[in-house]
Length: 455
Image 1: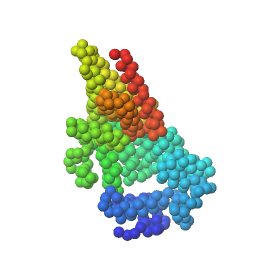
Image 2: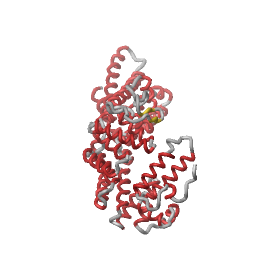
Image 3: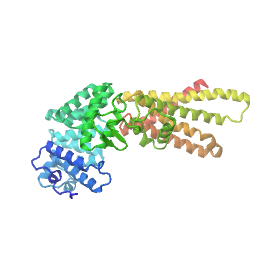
Image 4: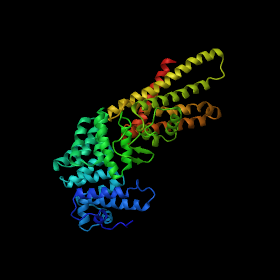
């Protein structure tokens, strides 16, 4: 395999007069050849892919390409930007900040570049991207509109305009923006994928399937297996949407074309499979919430969430029964009523949390389904119920141990709810940091009031 050239144009096998379209086409052709997903056991292919990606990131950006053509190397830019002076300096430093995930610092640098050069189109577009990551959808729309005033034919501006509109709940307007982006760049799979999600959200299934199948074709051409997996997630939820007219194209364990996979998507939650979901949520909520939810249809997500809640409620009730052991027959009759009250109280915590999650989703204008609210609520109360079973034992051994077990259960519960808010409700990390404990506090308070009312 050839060693990557120091010249970015040679890496992409294009001339110095190549247009943006030529550069993009060359990158896609080479990415298909060296993509790490298609060469899992070839480290040289990974190095080659990184090299062409580095060249592409510089040459596709107008400002960075101008600097490169003038003889400045990217590794020299970091030293020269310790005290940025020109709008271009702030712009390039903003790119470096975004690459290191210092999004607030990147936002400040892009804003400074725009203040120094109000017609800096690239800075508006980069700032829109950072604002989308930070959850500032109104800012995304404002920046994209400014880009389109400066350059009407900008596909990326329409794309981010669609993303911002969709997350604000303007689904039809988002579809229109994605369609404008597709009209300008018809071979970009991400545009079709996002428009398919919007169509799916308003139950225009035929249009969604058509967009997802087109996205599959282009993701396959680029060797983007992660993109293919994301499309399969959505196609599996649409009736008759899981088969492809093209193929066969193998993706890991899954077969694209022919018969649908027997392992993906998840079928109805049988006992063995439910136990797998149960252990995954309980042991790794941050890593399992989104992958599991994506592999479930809305009906399956509702079923799994309710099953989680039933398990948690059963454990909660059994814990109360353990605490009441060793009493007289008369007291046991009273205990039966207590157990019923415990069951109702635990159920009210789950239902209250699901309703509050739906309310918070509407308040923060996040797209989602009632099935997602039930799934998050069920997964959240699960650790509380499981660890409630340990309370009687730990209290006998040591009150301090019981307190530590309760604290651990509460921390795991908060982590689960936080993961659901960020991964399924698409709230920003900053918002979810405050929303998750607030929702948990409200739902537990409602359950306590229910207990005081019926006891």
